[in-house]
Image: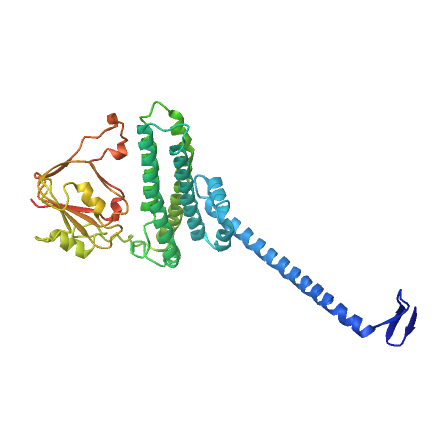
Length: 379
């Protein structure tokens, strides 16, 4: 092979000379050099982002552990948040104790989802069908879980919507007595705890298969503990807030503003006028003698609109209605209007002795009274 100025020459198998320009060879190598440079930069950026995310996650873990340390079950508090579905996104969003509180609430929602899935698996098992009483207890479990989950979602939304006010409140910038500025998170979370107790009460009278009760007890206990942790976080923040108030001022704490009219605070002015009105126009009429739109209260409830934003008035004419009425969670803003306590009577005889759980034994069962069900009679 001979070398000439500015080129490389070699002899091919056919004896012909082939010349490669040095300039062309440099151009051929340029794309490879560019790709190598891009790969190097990408690697540097990836490593930097990875290190940044690692630092953020470390900070989030530290905040979680600190917030969970005030709870009765700190290990469950920590693990339920970091191992929750969508934990990566949740960890990235954690900046303070309020975020941890939301994370624990969300963990409770997921735990209830898991419990409902377990109940459904038991009810649909073709190899071992539950008895009527067992199936009723399992159905009550699902009903209570749905209400508990609704309460936790409400608490989660309240914390999310009032983060700025909560921060000001806990930093002593909002008066203790100003309840309108700070949401009442204790109530829905406490309700969630009560629903878990009701779930277990439904299995108290089942003697034939204690294994069924035990199969859901761990899941129920898990939700109980998570709710306990949520309340502990709230109480710790409130205690710290009160301590700051007592330390910085000698004044008496403001009393909570009370409704002097005697009406529940959740009842709107329009609803108060509605209940005080001497004449109301019902949406439907229930009459035992068949002269109304429906002959049973249950049929009227079933036909009522779901999740109504305004009052739906069901007039129940004088008569004895021998039925069990259950108002589902999605039948909101119903108003039962009777002809008097001694003339409009709803009666039934359901009890545990009939294979019915206590939860389902009520003559008129209102799922979630906080959904603003109301009733009134003309005397």
